Amino acid sequence: MIRAGSLCRGLRLLRALPLPGPALGCAPPSRRLRTGHPQRRDLFSDLEKEVVKFRKKLKETLPGSDWDPLGTTKGLPPERADVVIVGGGVMGWSVAYWLKALEPKRDALRVVVIEKDPTYSRASTVLSAGGIRQQFSLPENIQMSLYSAFFLRTINEHLGVVNEPPIDIQFNPSGYLFLASEDEAAKLENNVRIQRAEGAEVSLLSPAQLKKKYPWINTDGVAVASYGLENEGWFDPWSLLNAFRRKAMSMGVYQCFGEVISFTISSREIMVPEGELTFSHINYVRVQMPNSLEYQPVECSLVVNAAGPWSQKLAEMAGVGIGPPDTPEGIKLPVEPRKRYIFVWHCPDGPGLDCPMLVDATGTYFRREGLGGNYLGGLSPAEEEEPDIQDLEVDHDFFQEKIWPCLAHRVPVFESLKVKSAWAGYYDYNTFDQNAVLGP
Image (cartoon, rainbow, N blue to C red; front, side, top):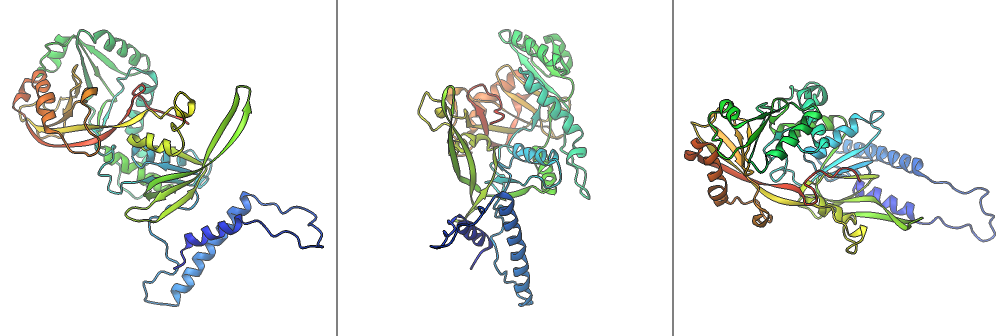
């Protein structure tokens, strides 16, 4: 069966063939035949319209039949796009939304979001703890998080869709509480000074003030604590992801479930005073469809790497980090997947409704989960104890041996907790400085 996509690709191949030269004895044309992008775009636009008309006419000749003439595989991405975003988590869909929100006129940009996991069962967004805080050590992170808090407070003004219910991301404004030992006290206090300078409302608490505010905390080993007074807490990341996705798609963004398996790249060299530089550009993104051998090449102008834990692998497809060692071409994107566990436990006599997101000096963290005496938390393992990333199996011994002793020490009533469930997810870890990588 001839497919519309195959027909377009065939025409592209025909267009690439050289035009026949003038016959012997014939004078060359008086001016050159000029080709360019506007003519090419008009050709494909006209072709698509004719294909639609042709399919409709054939369909009308067979009333009552479900046969689809020139049918195309469902879910294929468009053959051309201005921007291809690889990764359909909250980062990818946020980029898609902002590209459309900032475009100079409607449909000025054709944006495609490609996600390899249609179920989102392994997506980092969905498997996260959903926290938001301003208590960082870098001004850039504080500024971004302050704006994020404003965005979430006014989310329906940004992501609301006509004729759909208001968005509720179930935000719990209970704040973050960081505890520091004597060795880390000066560092925590300096961070608070930076946070306050950027406009974040953060208070410092002595052990006595901490005990008065949260009587259920054991303050042994705590020299100072910092608490976010506003714009901190946690929310449902799945609701936020879907809000971005619904809004972006209502603005014309294309969604595609498939895996990017390769790029078609063109390169050119230019001379600069320092020597010869090579500039590369991605012309096509090759998308493998789920549970199929079929793939679709997408012609594009720009690719956004929003692949999270798999960003380094995607960058290598584009030639980043595959050159000789000790050269700029050999510098890898320093992002790798790390497996992290999150446990949920029940403790009817626990901290209760005033429980914040508590981050202990040991790195152990927890927060309230709902209203029924449940709590959620975890701990990042030591570098030498990083678990295998080949699967998302949970090591329950890690909770018994590493997390529970810290919880029981800091909150004595947790001595009698009972683990209810657990899951594992991938964390995109920057081995260079543990911060985001933004830009080209």
